[in-house]
Length: 124
Ligand SMILES: CC(C)(COP(=O)(O)OP(=O)(O)OC[C@H]1O[C@@H](n2cnc3c(N)ncnc32)[C@H](O)[C@@H]1OP(=O)(O)O)[C@@H](O)C(=O)NCCC(=O)NCCS
Image 1 (cartoon, protein in one colour):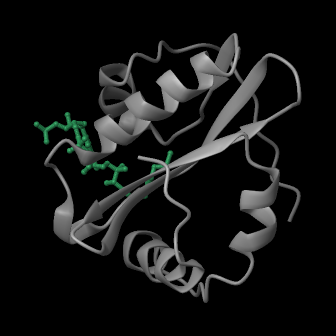
Image 2: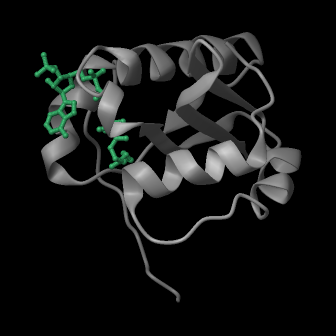
């Protein structure tokens, strides 16, 4: 589902899954620029999120695929990405990109992605 998440709850989810600090405030600007995003809830608790960034044309990029560790390995992540894929297709996107660490190869393969050559440059 695509429900606008409470930003503090998004920050808490990010912190639980990725570590570090996140008070949620900076997500306001991110969500304003998104093509779309997908959320997963258990009752009222935000347990999953994925963002779909957009170039304004036919390319979109999956970012911040996140499932709370207490709800991990139940298929929530694959479902989030599958819903994001459907939403991007419905918006007329031709190519959906993602980059990931090697241990997530199987996860993204299950989501329908195939490996390709890509580059990544850390600027900060
Ligand atoms: C990666 C992440 C989104 C997966 O979410 P999830 O809901 O646990 O994933 P699913 O239950 O849908 O996983 C489906 C399958 O993908 C593979 N998979 C999922 N997480 C994996 C991991 N950490 N390592 C290796 N394989 C993994 C497994 O094959 C899994 O099936 P199995 O549980 O029967 O073995 C979640 O662990 C997460 O938020 N991680 C921290 C943030 C992160 O690294 N995000 C990815 C950014 S590119």
